[in-house]
Length: 343
Ligand code: CP3
Image (tube, rainbow, N blue to C red):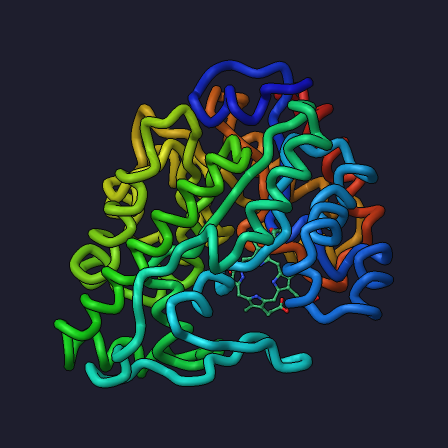
């Protein structure tokens, strides 16, 4: 049993730097692709036995310090009355986008027990299987990142529609954000009850906003979620992509740990965040497509900047890319654990 991750979340000293990887279960693993040939991504999520098996796949291969439940941030949308599907090769597509007040008709706060019981069942299965060996991470999307999908309709590059709604119809935008925040709170609380021992809030697209607009339009809703789920003995990781220009605002919104992408040196980010908060990150996932010496050079740089200061969780700055070799991941995990603070 290792409590490294939980200790690091709380800023306590650890025997080795804990490491897990966003999207550690997924297409770069051949055993995932075998299941994926038979089932669609949604079917995999909806079958608790399959989702549990996929969650555990990377742990069978690598000495990871956490499991993260196999699911998706978009799953709660359907129960809110916002249908979506995953188009082959294209990622998620929202069936009826929200771009005006009238589009919110029939959209309501979701209930995880009736909307995504399969996620809760998968959590229970994995928690039982792990038996406390490593902590199990539950997660949800932050309101702004979810709103980006709901308004844009797919994975947008410009975020023009969501910003148009935000600036042009702030009351409608706020109504949508409130519905999303309340839904996310319900899902995260249900995940704790089902066995999640750590939570991560994914605000992958936060950095598309400037710091002032993040502070005004997104952070209050993330803060509401983070406030509602904290103080329950379950540490919370607040991951905000592209947050280099607004670290103070991200920290102020809450979370025991701030998750960083790779666009800032870890020591500089930590200095800006200040005392009393742990830090997760921050290797560029694309580095893992390079040769071993390049991976080690980059990983050593992250670790050197963290200086084995209590409260560092090693991770990538975003999810593992499908073209990554599992051997590279194996070497990375070993390298992080073996790091002795020198070199
Ligand atoms: O981290 C993990 O291992 C847990 C599982 C997990 C998935 N999605 C599985 C998945 C988690 C934590 C997510 C979060 C998620 N989903 C985010 C936030 C983090 C991020 O990546 O920014 C976002 C934005 C989504 C929405 C989403 N889901 C997109 C844009 C896509 C398509 C892009 C892609 O990589 O294919 C998905 C599909 C998805 N979610 C897959 C997996 C393993 C790929 C499904 C497949 O085709 O096999």
